[in-house]
Amino acid sequence: MRSGLLPLHGSVAEALRLLGALTLRLPRLLWHALSALFPRNRRIWVFFCWDGKRFSDNAKWLFLHCARNGPSGVVPVLLTRSPSVLRQVRAAGLRGHRPKTLRGVWWRLRAGIYVLDNAVGDHLFWGSARAVRVNLWHGIPLKKIGRDIDSPGHVNTQGFRGSLLQRARFRLEHPWDAVRYDMMISTSSLVAERFSRAFSVPRDRIPVTGFPRNDVLLQGSFTPGPWDEAVHRTAEGFLRQGRRLVLYLPTFRDQAGAGDEIPIDVLELSRRMEAWNAIWVFKPHTWDPRTLGGSARAPQGLWILGPRDDVYPVLRHAHVLVTDYSSVYFDFLLLDRPIVFYAYDLREYADEGRGLYERYEDAVPGPVARRFADLLREVELALERPEVHLARWARRREAVRRACHRYRDARASARVSREILRRFVRVKGLRETARKNGGETP
Image (tube, rainbow, N blue to C red; front, side, top):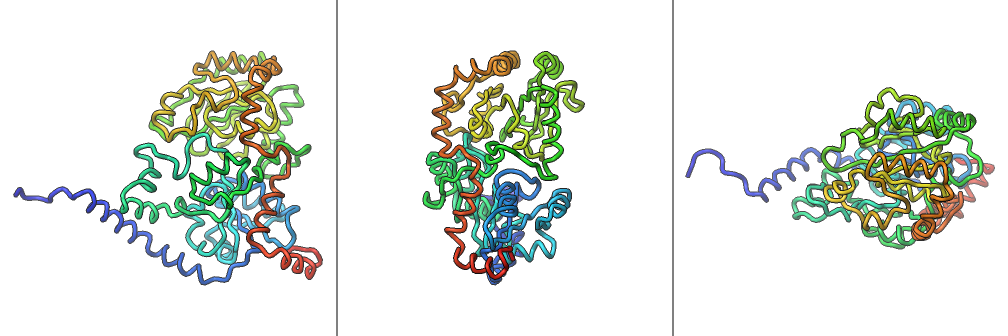
């Protein structure tokens, strides 16, 4: 036998990786177990948006609903890792804390309801034992999510379909991704079925309520908080000038090369926007560093949002939406305005990414542009003759809207809060508490 170490058998190597993960996680596992000893109050709801880095999406809008006109007797608390968001929330008279400060930990241990819109995450999972976890998620899935992802090399594929050792290590390293939530929400029965499979949550735990973020699109008037005031003011300024807004929202890519520049000629785009009296609004995805070519200093006619800005106060004003594989187009359908799809990397995305629930061309209710010239042509039609664009895609748009949205109103937040109360909180006790406090929340 040759000298030196023999190559380790695959299962032995995997067992060593599992042991290493267990060693690293042991202090947090002990902390998590101890958190089960603390008495939790289901009248205290903590909210966590996008791993605490952003103040946006469904958890944000449900938090604001509960804080301003939600159920009496419920104490909503925002947990955020952003110092600026924390300052703004507190300045507005709302409860907010950093999750790992003494006060933040106290609220985490006392809260009976955890409300989030992505995953519980490393900053919130540990110490959440015995809390009710409500995941509002962040979009209607076009690309596969959770347990449905089966592309080779993806962490979820090994975590849910790999060997016993691989699955055990996944649950140690990513326990928040293996959580079976006590409740989720959906926009239709079709969406509820997809969530049920992807997250292994029983169908009866996924009521059809609509998404709280869509209340922003559908309510007649909108008064922004300090966290949205800047983008909302800029958007309204362009509208007062008579400019039209074309909102470009690409999604993130799992596959290699995701950091490449997007194939858009920024100078030509700027010329077209000026000719059409429009503004091209670009918001990069939080998880994707791709940029428009030369967009570090945007020329005339382009407005670049920050990756952590909440797009929904701007989306409500958009005349045209341009996207690729983002679920935002499902929401924008509620406004019945033109949508153009710029899928310049469709083959690579479908073959190398996590996969789609259905054939892309069958799922999108609008024209698919593969080249920049085609994109410009479709955007021009959508801006200059929107009635022609909408008529051309009317049947597909209505079919997708019916499949994905049961409601078309601004009452999703109210329905969600009622569902949480009905399922997890003794409403009679809440009313008695509110009476004792003169109608005020404790």
